[in-house]
Length: 277
Image (tube, rainbow, N blue to C red; front, side):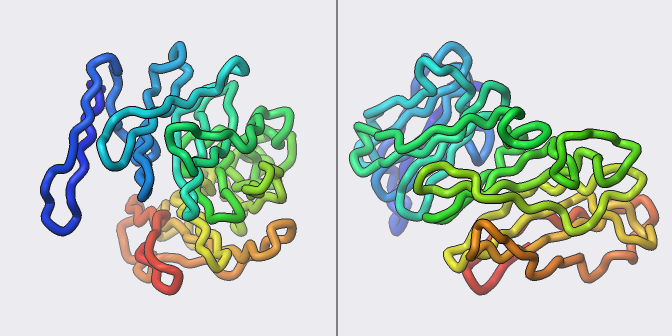
């Protein structure tokens, strides 16, 4: 909760190259979606900037000097999360309405160029819009995957917690990086049971081979040996208008814990060919 302190080190010698410290910023970097590093720049979120709407500060990768600041401008809107695409472009997003998903060309980090901005309001994207409550937005150079934590399981506009198909289970939307168009969305292959939701919202990334990984940590096994075994769902998004499920993975040891136990298998990372979950 204090002002951010960012240090850069030489990877081979671990020699400190520079340090950035700003007493005027009241909140530090307390989540992975508050900081992004590329070969050309460092970006971090000041959640209290721009009238508490949030802003993104850009640092020179060589000197650590602040060279630019990004915010949602006159349109307003919270800007509280960031990540970078493999090509170095910067994507920003918010968590609370009004919120926008925005992409910037960072060829000249001192002069970011906004390529597009789209509203993530509920009126445009099903029941609750994608505000990315858990900050899990990821993508490759072609697509961005962003969660909608409060969307219904069936993607409809009617919420009814007494009907599993209409329960707020979460969905993940696929956004085209060329213009911000929402191409489609994917939902949980497993219908929520009577006890709650599967929490289909843990976006773990889209690989360069167009495999989308989404975690659903609250998924129950049908037999009920444990409450939350969790699942990792893998989708083929080569055709972003028609994504398809490749496989759903469950923990190998599920069913061996006590009845109140939890594996909560929902996060993964790694290379194109190997995933650590």
